[in-house]
Image 1: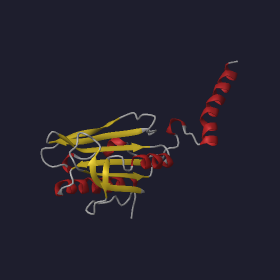
Image 2: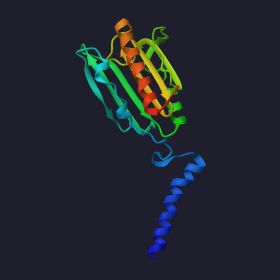
Image 3: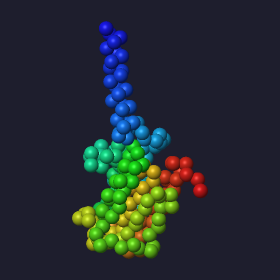
Image 4: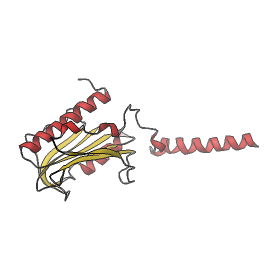
Length: 191
């Protein structure tokens, strides 16, 4: 009787895990996610990337809402001059197609009246990328900001830097170059 109960429980568990995956592409417990040797928390920005005197808010792990669908979400940034100056988020999805969908939803969500800006660096390893300057939707920032959204495989990045003057553009470019180099190294991408 005990053996039969264990067999039935085993079959139910297998049906719960395998059947949805086969028929509808559902992946319980993020079993479909590629193995990575790092978490989104290890993608935080180093404090020395900011100008002297800035206050860095380290990345913290958040359990995402179901509307985001990610299984890892890190958020961080930096404040100085009594304003949020840098807002930075990283999401990791179990499947690349879910990351693509989320990227498409947020690709222009940080700014209104956004326009491309020639001096902004691009992430060379990004599968999808957009960078613009405009009026920030975040009320804690100033009148102008530059923003980028990128997708690298199952990761989605969002970065907004307060301002669009030379100092803000320089910081934006340092951060984008850092993320590009860091992800290239962590994911083992070789040119």
